[in-house]
Length: 367
Ligand SMILES: CC(C)(COP(=O)(O)OP(=O)(O)OC[C@H]1O[C@@H](n2cnc3c(N)ncnc32)[C@H](O)[C@@H]1OP(=O)(O)O)[C@@H](O)C(=O)NCCC(=O)NCCS
Image 1 (cartoon, rainbow, N blue to C red):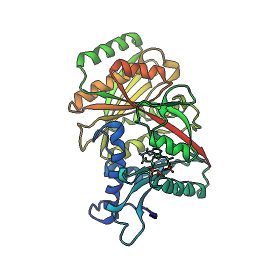
Image 2: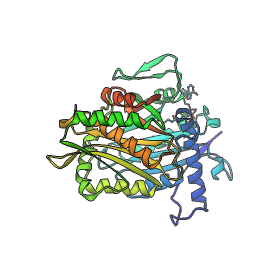
Image 3: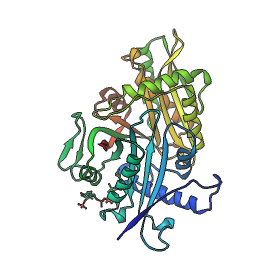
Image 4: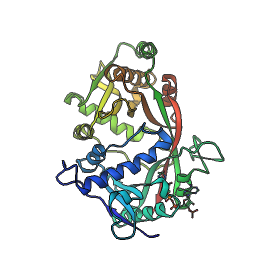
């Protein structure tokens, strides 16, 4: 059978929820979500149409193109016939040479060459756009079996994993493994308090924790921008070639507006270094407001390098979990993604009760 690919266009007007563009977007969402179930559990991590639309259409440093693949033939381009969803992202200001493709083939349509067909198409588009490097993060839930280690020596994927086999076959190289973990909530309030008090005592009087929900105070934006920029180079990247991200106050504000427009809220915990008046640690959680029982997602956690070794990492994470429990006690979990070689962060997470779900591979391919 032959297939063809159609690029999606955002619903017009943006509020239209009944037209063809919206139906295609919902089919895109459903294919992506079915791909998550094997790793995160049925219905635990779900993309929402509102979030896809906000990420796709709102101003930001990353721009995306979305695609669906269909079987060839008259009338086959209606949403329900789509057999694969694909996204091609670029972030020209941070990484002018890179493109970030992602392909999900609907489970019943796998192993018919559709993944290869769609991936080839994205590769051609990236090449035509002058990109020389592809990168992608991919979940590898297949347990056991013969394992291939990441080049970092930390973490591995099963040689039986479909996505890993697919990527090896199409010329990609594994550069790093992250550990996907989940903390099931609720956790006992006393246990979080104990962690917070121990970390506060260790940090000493020069450090004070702040927590807030939603848009950050304008006075914090420059510090948050510095922390985000540090995160892009300080977090271990294994063999992956990554560029430093350029952050300023406006980019932080833009990211926050985008998250809120996507139907999410976010919770921040930060540590103020009292003598200097600057924030020196931050941890952020996002959760979808359409169903706050679903797990929250951990975003950046970072401690400025000159302030490490004082338990500030534990302090911001535990303080934010306490904030989450206070504001959204119905939330059933938190997902987090950490480099396997990031021993400090993993130790903090394990102490808080996070358990491993699956590895996620960072892959790259030179065009
Ligand atoms: C990875 C994925 C996109 C592959 O899509 P697909 O349409 O099944 O892939 P293809 O039919 O083009 O397979 C190409 C090659 O990949 C390998 N492969 C794919 N699935 C495999 C499986 N289940 N077992 C073993 N090898 C597999 C094979 O070498 C295959 O070639 P062959 O059939 O000639 O042996 C699909 O499994 C998927 O959507 N997984 C979930 C989402 C995901 O992980 N996406 C990441 C890709 S960026």
